Length: 98
Image (cartoon, rainbow, N blue to C red; front, side, top):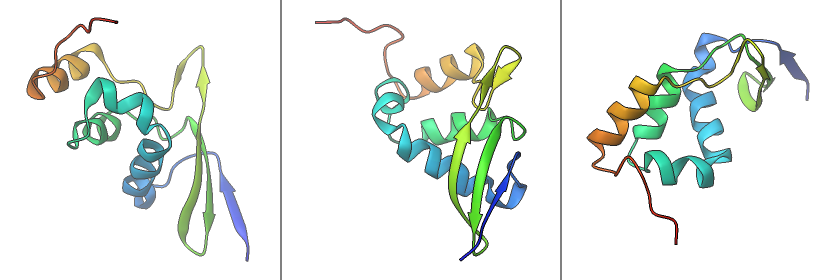
């Protein structure tokens, strides 16, 4: 078994990367964006393929690590995207903390 590491996300692994990244951060993402595909949509349209390290084994994505620098990060959803997704999912823009 050989694992190849790349410093970018090849396009053919984009869908797998979004699913893997979402599943890893599900507890943090779902309360904000919901679980009905909106979070995956936000990730899909706002990832920087050159701001990550990926692991590929047997032509399958097996790991991904997003990188954040002072010039941006792997996931950078715009405010416009966040508002659009929040409004479409009928989620309040603010939440009360109990």
